[in-house]
Image 1 (spheres, rainbow, N blue to C red):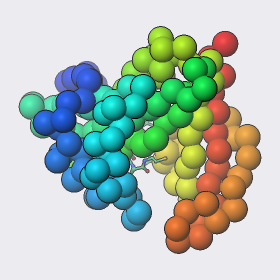
Image 2: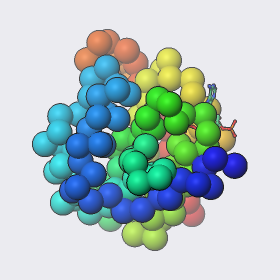
Image 3: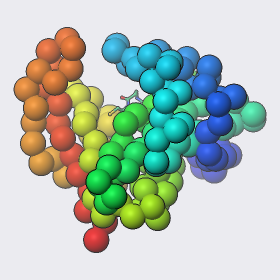
Length: 149
Ligand SMILES: CC(C)(COP(=O)(O)OP(=O)(O)OC[C@H]1O[C@@H](n2cnc3c(N)ncnc32)[C@H](O)[C@@H]1OP(=O)(O)O)[C@@H](O)C(=O)NCCC(=O)NCCS
């Protein structure tokens, strides 16, 4: 499978420009680069997927209140989607957050983002609530959790 050829490793500050390029391509309301940089200094896991030396995806998860993991962002470059890389990043992020003490992990996702919702459901996340007009354009968010205990 293609995902097998993608190496997942810790992100470094040298990856920031490539991470930001994927962020801008992936979201209508991308995080600013300084915020993506700030997560390097927050307790949690910041990982990238690399194919032939190129960063093609990334995922950021942080730990809140010692035992709650929170997935801040996950994205794969358009040309590399649908090849198992998002799943690989998500599974690795969960493993790392669990290893850091997370008992539950939370993620917010746009109500219309079927692909991501499918990925989270398949991984074991369930929807706990819907937050009305969560996003700047007025779209609702689903708040999903996975219980690791
Ligand atoms: C969401 C995202 C990270 C998934 O990464 P990906 O590498 O494309 O996903 P994968 O190939 O690993 O597929 C994982 C699962 O996602 C779902 N999925 C992937 N492509 C899909 C499609 N075209 N239609 C429906 N479901 C799809 C499936 O459940 C799939 O599992 P399966 O292959 O066992 O059926 C990627 O699509 C992306 O970067 N999207 C834009 C950014 C974004 O929306 N991030 C999430 C924010 S909450």
